[in-house]
Amino acid sequence: MNLQPRRLWLCFIALVLPCAQAADRPWKMATTAQYTLLSQASDLETREWMRGFDQFILSTADLLKFDLKALPPLTVLVFKSDKDYMPYKMRRPDGKTASVAGQFVRRPTWSLIGMSLAGDNEELRQTIFHEATHWLMSMDQARQPAWFSEGIAEMFSTFERRGDKVNWAKPLGSHLALLQDRTIPLSQFLIEPTALSNRDDRQLLFYAQAWAFTHFLMFSDDSRRRPLMLKFLEKFRSESGEATVKDVFGDQLPQIEREFHQFIGQSRYPYVIQPVKPAPAESALQPAPAVLVEASLGLLALSSERPELAQEHAKRAIALDANSPKGYELQAYIGLEKQDLEQAAAQAELALERGSRDSQLFVLMGDSYTQGRNSERPDAERARVSMYEKAINLSPRRREVYQRLAGALMPVDTPTETDLQFLNVGLRAFPGEDWLQVATALVEHRLGRHDSAAATLDKVLRPDSTLDPSEREYAQNLRRSWWVEAMNQELRAATSAHDIAAARAAISKYRDRLADVPEIATYLNELEASLKKAEQPAQKRGSR
View 1 (cartoon, rainbow, N blue to C red):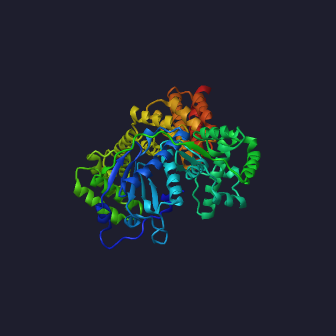
View 2: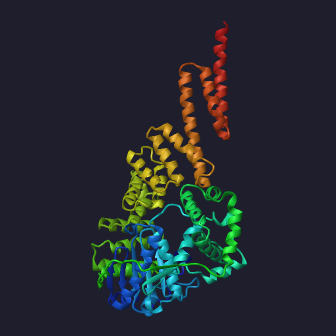
View 3: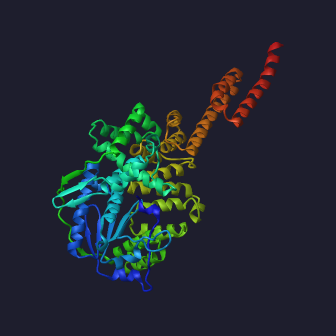
C-alpha cells in the first residue's frame, strides 16, 4: 500500500500564504536515533505518539533482525490541527482534498510522515505502520519477493500498544472476506514482480493474499512452513522467481496451496502479544530550527504535487540561511519534479558545495552527464561514473545506484581498478544482481583479464539468470564480440605463419558459437572463401 504511486497528494490551498501560516506557528523538535520529529502538538501528545512509534520500530526490527543504525533518514511532521495540515494533504485523483489524517512519503534517500493527531484513527495508523515497515525494510535492498514485502507490511500495519504490552499480526477482516471469493494461483502469485496492477480489484486481492500467505507461513501449526519462507527469501536474493519456486516448493506446491485454502477458511487466527521493549531515554523537545522546518514542509508539499508551495518554502529556507544546503536540496527536487534536469543539477551542485550528504544529489549529477550541457563536456563519461561512485560512498546499500554505475561504465574504454572494486562491492551486497555481473565482466575484459571476464559472462548467461530480455541480448552480443575478437586473433597468428590449416581450425572452433547470427555467419563464410582462394596458389606451387 505504497502511497507514493497512488499520487493522491495535497488538496486545499488558502488564498493567504499557507506556507507562512504553517511555518510561523511554533514548532518543536525531537531527534532520536531513528528519526527527527517536528511537532506543533502539545508536548504531552507528541511524547505519547513517539512512545508508540518507538515501540513499533523496536518490535519490527527485533523480528526482522535489522540494524537500526542503517535506517534511511525519516522526518515526522505533526501539525497542531487538521486545518494547519490541510494545505499539505494528499489530493484525490479528481483534484479534491483527500479525507485523510496523515500520509507517508518514501523516497530513495529520505522519508516523511505528515499528520495531524486530531484525526488519528485506525485507518491512519495502519497506513503509517504499513509504510513504516517498508521504510524499515528499505535498509536491506536485497531482492525480496513482492508477496513477502507487502505481506509483512500488512501484518505490522495492525501494530498497537496497550499499556505495557504490544500486539501485531491481528487478522484483517476485509482481507479474509476478499479471499473467500477467489485467490491468485500460487504458481503465479509467488513470482509476481510487484503488487501494483492496472486493476484496483486485482491489487487489493494481491495485498490480501500477501498478508494471508505470509501469516500462513509464519504462524502455522506446521513447523515446516516457516523454514520454507526463510529458504524462499534466501534463494530469491540470487535466483529468478520461477527458479526459487521450483527449488523451495517443487512438487509440494499443490499440497501447499490446498493447505493455504484451508488456512484462510479458519475462524480463528493467532497473533503476537509481547511486552514493550526497553526504550532509550526520551529525547527532549526543543525549538526547531526554522530552516529545517521550511525545508521539511517544502518536501511534504512537493510530495503532494504542489511545487508552487514547495518553492515558497525553498525561498524562505535560503533567505533564512544561504549557507545551509537544505533550501538548495529542496530546489533540486523541485527541478526533478518539473523534469528540468539542468535546473535540478545546478541546485544539486549548490547543495553539495554547502555540505549536503544526500547521495541522491550525486545520482542526479551523474544523470546530468547523459543529457543537457554537462553531457557536452569532454570528460562527461568519466564524470558520470565518478558521481555514481560518490553516491555509493554515501549510501552503499542502494541497488539502483550500482545499476546506474554499471550502465555508465559500458562506454568507458579505459576503466580503472577502482571501478571494478565498486562493482565488486555491489555484487557482495546484491549477489543476485546479474546486470552487475555483466558490467564486471566488461570491465575485467577491458583491464586485460579475458579468461575471468569470459567465465563471469558465461555464468550470467545461464537460462535462469535475473537478466531482462534487453540485458540478456546485450550480454549475448558482448560474448559473441569476444569470440570474434579471439577468433580474429587466432586467424592473424595463423595467416602470419602461412598456416591455412590452423586458420580453418580457428573458424571451425568458433562457428558453432557464432553461426546463429546471420551477419556473423556471412562473415565466417567470407573468411572460408578467402582461405580457399589463398589455398589454391599454394596447391599449384606444390604440384610443380
